Length: 309
Image 1 (cartoon, rainbow, N blue to C red):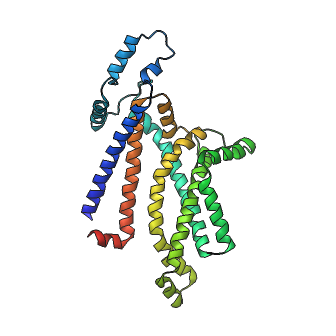
Image 2: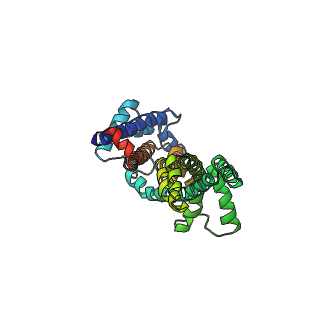
């Protein structure tokens, strides 16, 4: 078990490092100079002054030197400052991160409750009109783009009905964004739950439980659902990382001041330190969730514990 955890931990660290390398090179591959963009509207800054600013930020050095300087500062707890405004990158990201985490967590709860309920019902009513209707709804849910569903919800419930604010920072501002991310991901959870439960309903131990005269509710909840939760919990953990990525779009649609909206602004402004800090923090959060899912999977499934010992 300890060897398994160490291997997973080393794999997580390598995944974060690989992400920063690939992302760092992709950022610099985009045409355009952030310093020239910053002073594009200023006529008072000469070419010599712009070049001096580039040297002070280390942007005149080769990419591999910039990367090692960046990682060297990270190891000392220094994420640098933004090109625009000179604000500390770490403070800026940590100040916005709670909004994104709340949005992703609420969306995950909605996806879990709705997806598990509908998937279990579809499996229980397999081959009936209920099953067909629910799976058609799940296909539609998977097919609908996040931003389009968000705009439709915003138009109906905020603009037309006025039930929730269009923008803001109170709890009501998270209702529509959470529904947008949660409902579309619930469709994925429902399809996986249906497939897992149909396989479990056909197992011998389920038929044995019925043959012993156990009540249907006990067989479904204690034997079937408990076994089916193992792959579903794994998938839900991975969905959290997907929702963190989806929050980048949803925060811009609903004007939420989260990390995703900050990242889009940083990309448009070519603010390299802020983009690198965002990628590093996001990769750590997502890889940490993947590591936690692996450990939880190990705890829930005794067969995996036997395989690693």
